Image (cartoon, rainbow, N blue to C red; front, side, top):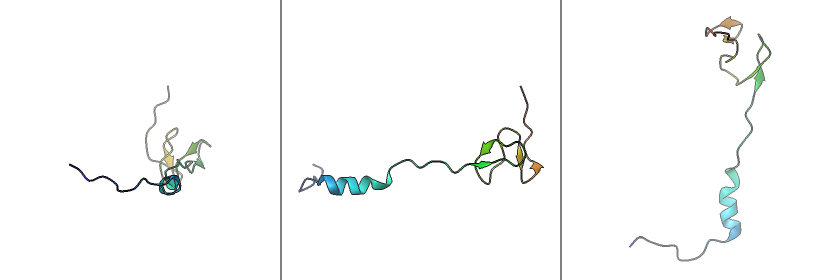
Length: 61
C-alpha cells in the first residue's frame, strides 16, 4: 500500500501552496521596424527584423 496523509490539509495551506500557479501576462514590446507587438529579445514574427537588421526572411501572402 502507498502512504497516505495522516491529516487533511486545511484550505488555507492548500491555497497558499497554489498562490503562485496563476498565469502571468506576457511582456510584449513594440517592433522598431513595423510597430507590431513581439516578445523581447526575439526576431519580429511579422517582419523578421531584430535590432534593426533583417534576421529571418518572411514571405508575405
